[in-house]
Image (cartoon, rainbow, N blue to C red; front, side):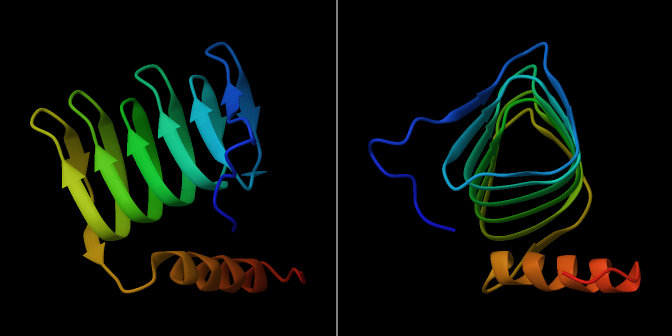
Length: 130
């Protein structure tokens, strides 16, 4: 995944949008709506009313809204009043006072490679070929 270039605009998913399925984007994603599926991007910001039910894979993930499933990111920040029910695999994790976190937190050397390996294993166990 490449870093966001200065000229690339962030992908903004609006508040009333509901995306069912997976999203892969090379840049920054600002989620104001809902994703029912996995998201892979360079950077993710889940706003106060945003929600993800699936696997997040990003270099940096900031959650102000809701997330459930799993988070794989080098830098994870859970902001005040967020609600996260997920296992988090990270290099750095910041929890602000007042955030809600239910799940496991594991510090790993390379969370993005771990996410890729687990995704491939899941895909293979379903009998699918990439």
